[in-house]
Image 1 (cartoon, one colour):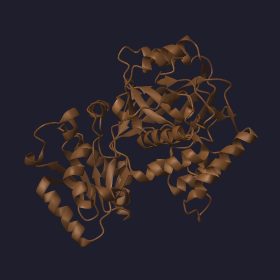
Image 2 (cartoon, rainbow, N blue to C red):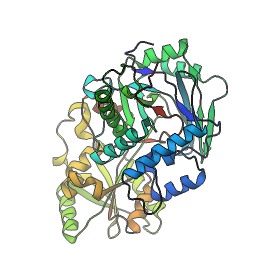
Image 3 (cartoon, one colour):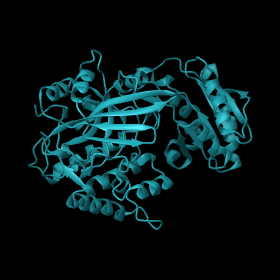
Image 4 (cartoon, rainbow, N blue to C red):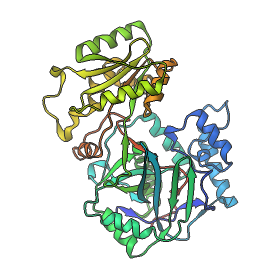
Length: 438
């Protein structure tokens, strides 16, 4: 394998069992407190105990949380719960799921991706990140000396060569499998051979587009620099110079982006007045008939209204006092030019610029804005008083995401929700200083 190759095989740390149904977990950023407790109860070796260590109701979330995750990882290795593969491999992976009455599969390969700064143009982001989550992932990565969950990245495959290589690597029974809800997971292990070389050569042409895991990638970059400084004699192929990633061809039906709706928390009558002024200034508002006592029906009414073709300047809104409404940006506030990569016309960019950032301030998004991809859940949260206003967006497309990334720009955080999330627990990447990739 060429040392400068972008994607490379590595010796993964994996569960020493074939059925992973009880040990897989979602990534950290979608695990709420109730879900975390359920995952802990599902199996004493569930991956959530590494990904989001939790020691009970008194857990303050301090350094002990990361130390506990490191102790758990060490114990599982010594007990044989987790074991390293004998040599470097690629890990082909098929994720089957249901959506809107269809059965879809997203196929990809888990591998080690060489960490490169975004300005090099080999790995491209499309969303901004926040300091808090980056620091959280940094503490976990350094404490465990491991990358627990993968970054999800897309790549172009116009001639289908990568998809063909993935299909060839998925022959024979999978190394591990899982059934979680209506999702089916299958993982293969492929030691180095001609197909592995071909896959790495094709993907190595880049660029890779980060779909999910911006915080994890940026954290891995920072941790790599820290470990390089601490270990100046480390080889370029040191594991800490790479990030665990699931690479998927963008051109497949199983690559799906769901909308990420915004839920606002308003703290005073003055903020409600400010919201009304912003709506009056920038939008026209049309009521949508909906049954607020039935969140699913109300959500369906809003979604149907949003499906009408337009340039992306239409949004749904739900409040307890006003029910369902359709917001359309007034023509004088529409961008005169699409901007690089069509950035100015993106729904998330418009709604943040004209309403959300002006209302709560971009520096307070983390404390004042929540997110939901399920429309009925968004309505339900407002109805129950857990949020004050729900703003509904149409989904960003893969093509839009790629154009923005290629233009070197970023969308607001949570502009895309690639569904389903790549699970934690399939393969762990050990980045301790003594380890290398092939």
